[in-house]
Amino acid sequence: MSLSRPTKAVLFQLGTLALVVLAGAIVGQFFPLDKVIGRAGDWLAGARPWSYALYPGALAVANLLLLPAGLLIVGGGFYFGLAKGFLVVLAGHLLGAAAAFGITRRWARGWVEARLLRSPRWRALDLAIAREGWKIVFLTQLNPLSPTSLMHYLYGATRLRFWPTMAWVALGQAPGMFLYVYLGRLGSFSWRVWREGRAQEEGALWLWLGGLAATLWLTVILARLAFRLLDEAQQRALDEEARQHRERERSVAEPALAG
Image (cartoon, rainbow, N blue to C red):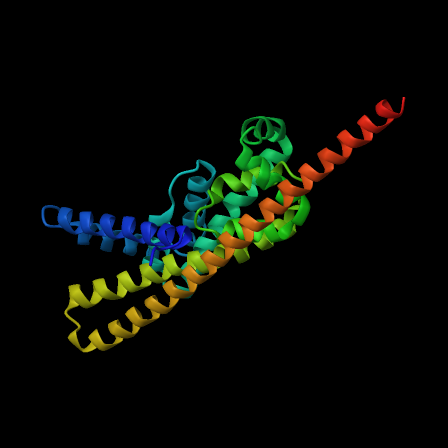
């Protein structure tokens, strides 16, 4: 059975992270990477509470510059733990989303409309947002195929209100972000077991792996649902625009025929 596009997208992202980890393990054979990781953790721990502001700031900048932020999100779980790491990276993502929204709304609305809405895909998305509002914000953030950082700029060009948009961005990002943070927390636990030789904690490691499998399964289910609902919403918006266009043409043609 072939995999759906959202499932492939999630697995591709995880596969990319796995390749990065593998590359790090190879580099670690020739370079004291474990010491670098340990020192970074010590610095973040020593810089608290400031690190709780610096780390989200770095993630926000990455989002604004449309840079891949997967490693930073995983790093949040690795260095801050599951609960705190999730809150730290979610705060960083929302900070970047708020800044992008504000930049477009205040200064770059015309530029974003001119550049993005020329594409049929973005035009359909803009129509769907105008038609169904917060539902589309939630689905575009939940869908792993959506360029979420770029979406934040597009939201600012619409009539969406700021605070509800940020709330739906947070809800849509939460499942995928939790998966990445979970991977980071699992990596931190595994690293300590390997580094400190805690053989007695290997049973707990299997529990973490079981939790990862459950989290991954839920993320894929939500991603597939988001992809289907978003596709349907965009098609409804396009159909409605086509219907309105036909009605306008008919209203113009009927008086001419009557005359």
